[in-house]
Image 1 (cartoon, rainbow, N blue to C red):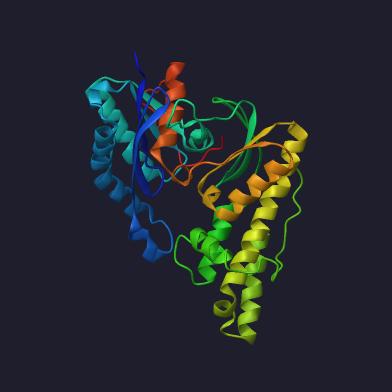
Image 2 (tube, helix red, strand yellow; image 1 turned 45 degrees about the vertical axis):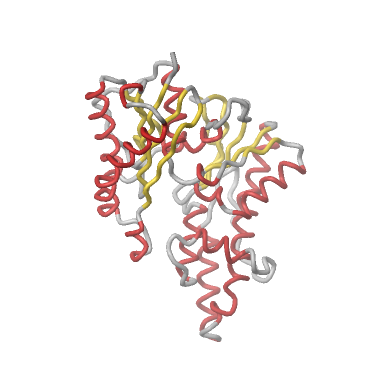
Length: 338
């Protein structure tokens, strides 16, 4: 009998539902929230209200596009955390209610596990997936981690940010440049037109595999402040070069630690995940590094880099196969590591 998993993702400002059958993706529906753009960041209360409006039509659409009925489901997987509590409560409550109504088990998924396991989402039976063990560079607005993945349920965080994450550095620096929220994609677009060697920014010297991006952010802000005193139009004149130099520096910081982790662990496969893995420069840098060192690179489709329910469904699929179900008294959590 086939195993059909419905995944529900509501950790931040995207409401998503996906259906996976025997590991193959049948549908992945995402409803994004544009209401936050005018505030320059996600407003938690507005996000949870939008989830309440979106979750029923999103789940209904995902099931219809998959060509199944809700009675065909084997289990319902949902993001339990980390994330915004109000947003998580919407997805958690909906999953529990649907589970009770259909008498199907529920599976709770760690959002970060989902990003790591997004590489196991397959559209065809012969799609290539990583072999254990591998290292995943997990980079997003809230997390920058180097994860050693020994199995779907055996992951070790080798290093992580001690302050800002890479995505935060992109977004905060972009905001100072006057770019819209979210700033990361705008930095990526401008960087393709700029000179990455024009400006130099501070790099941290943190022992081990841990990251730090606060120093880079601070040096970027002070440089812009001082430059604007001499030339009020400095940012406008140098936007592309600033973006390119910032992106190059962030990539160099990310790669320095990743190279050390790969050398020390001896793994032969490297994957990236999280929203920042959609960045063109990051994707190319990882591909180049792996090609140079004869490593196998796994770079996800851009549709699976941001928050999506396909990654929740595949994580739930593997937990279902081992009977790792969730109790109805489970509550969402805002912060947790892998």
